[in-house]
Image 1 (cartoon, rainbow, N blue to C red):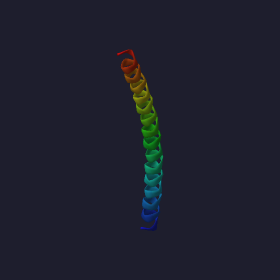
Image 2: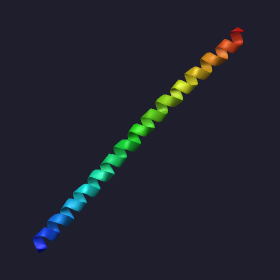
Image 3: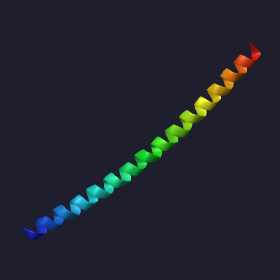
Image 4: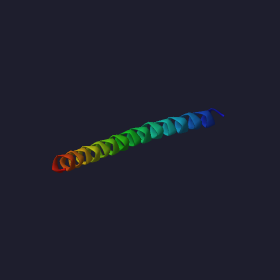
Length: 55
């Protein structure tokens, strides 16, 4: 019985570590996506401003 409890506790620790790691990866990916979107918005604003100047 004690061995089963230890195994369960170890399993929970591993699952918790996996969740933390996955959360970090998701946050990192979200940050990269946000930077790309910001870059696109900047390019669009530049093109829009240039179109306004030409007209």
